[in-house]
Image 1 (cartoon, rainbow, N blue to C red):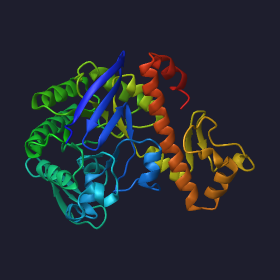
Image 2: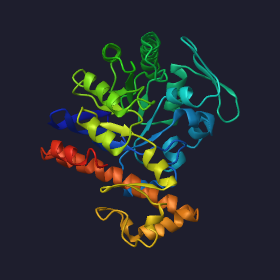
Image 3: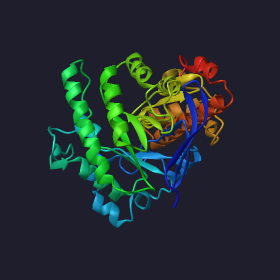
Image 4: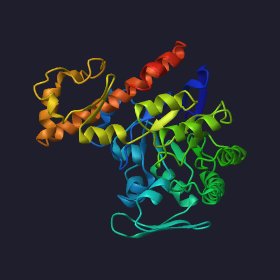
Length: 368
């Protein structure tokens, strides 16, 4: 069995071309992970996802813990067998959803998060040890430490307390993870918008030692400029020999800006959620396909689309599907968006390889 490994193949200033090796396959970075929240990437089959050249997907510990439950998935042989997916899978820890979804939650330093299900109100306890136990039960390839993801605030004391709690939980998560050389455990850097807290968090995680380092506590309402400032503040402190993961981000121009600041991995529900609601991402910019101006427009959605022959379907036809609430519209646009994101990542990698990333960034940063 292959051990988890990461190596940087080339750098263009802080932008990095890299390769992650996992037991289930290699991942070229920078990489985008489609989100399969409940053991499915919404409106797509796994075969479709693979045709977009996606190399890894993300699933959600919180949701799978609530429905169908880890024991049922273990009985099926693990998450890969359960959802018929042979790609590597990263599972998050559940910390973000505890903050964003639960009807009632309480944080206890020792017990972890105590919360009520957003489905039926049932009480759950999610400690660092329980989060790791669930993720190991799911048999994912990359696991995340349990952290507290606070809501955006400028209150330094709240963020400081939360960051220190996340460090304590990270240490407990590492101990619970044990010796699993064929899997990876990533630490999560917290600290809000405060540079000193972000650096303190990262240094604490480096002392514990992880296989990768994620930036959490973003995509919670801050502006893009604030997010880029956080990345700028920490980019020189992130270890060169480990992957850098920006959680829950984002738009195509978010990704371009973050790659420039040293980020290797991304996930976001945006391409699938937008696809289901009629918003397409294209090389010419964003397209709201439900707009009346696309009636009788028989041109393809994106002439530059190079994969899957998705241009068989005109804007006219897609407009019709959405305006008649046909499921096929959501399926086609979701597949298009995921494919676009993967074409974007491929182009980013090629431009880093060719030493042209800065020019590529500048061409598209305000267009996408």
